[in-house]
Image (cartoon, rainbow, N blue to C red):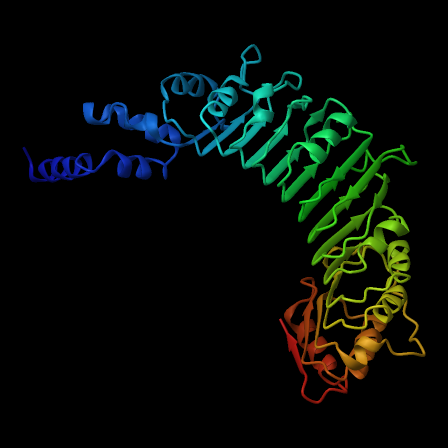
Length: 432
């Protein structure tokens, strides 16, 4: 036997001498298909993989055959009494005449803690077993695409803390409403991404324990409704701390006040109703990716606790309503203008008329100002001049130029901006 083969055999023997629990822990760190393949090493390894508590099966686009058959067979032999995670992605290769819910029922019977199930097969959406929605051990659940979500009346997930519903189809409004309000008493985080034909008219999120909610109801341009389609988002979450909404559906939104709100992101294709904006009045950090009409609505709301504001303009008419909003944010310390996504293909110039007043936050609290993808225009420079001239407590102003400028243009613009006077002599003007 060669020296290399002898060394390999010694190394193998040393690993084989490790306790089963340690080997199982090691196998949990590698893909399931590789863990199963260790059964061919020796008799010592024949059944160790069957105790691995983390199972992952994923169809790969470049392969013609589905992972389903491997999943089906390996689950028949897998015998770990407790399963930490089952992660399944079945793509278009998956046969449509199989019961994909069997693997879910299998791990539910073994006190599974996390299930990630994404079904992208060519068949219609399918139901998963009812036992899934009564799994007492389940802490995290993620369902995606071709899944028909039908919560039975007996649903109860007492340990569920995180729920993801991505582009699934629902039985009806009441089933989801009942589940969220009655069946998951400790739910902390809810992520909902919707498709246009998901059978929901009204999404009601009434979860007293919820602290994080992300809602994405964005369609392609061809799918956007021209008129109100009667949809509604109802939110009643009194301890919510993080709230992210991306919505182009024109659905109505109704929500109660959120006194504990720390961070919010609001992107909309139309002006949200006043009730929604007033519910955000206690937020500490706010990002708005909105149009002129929405900024005008926001300018009527008092943001008494707001310390950080990020504006992502979508049109040219945003400076004046922004000034009104700043007037309603007396504690603001950090202001960012992220101009990377504003539509510059239209021949419309930024509009700016210097107000005859100074928002209180500029003269008393603003410390950090940043402008991302600054464009060298007359109105832009006038607004920047205004900010630097009235921010008495400013510490840093950071400007990044649009990437379309070449090095020579960047140098000329930077030299010009350096000459803008700053009322705060201790402030720094930075470029990146």
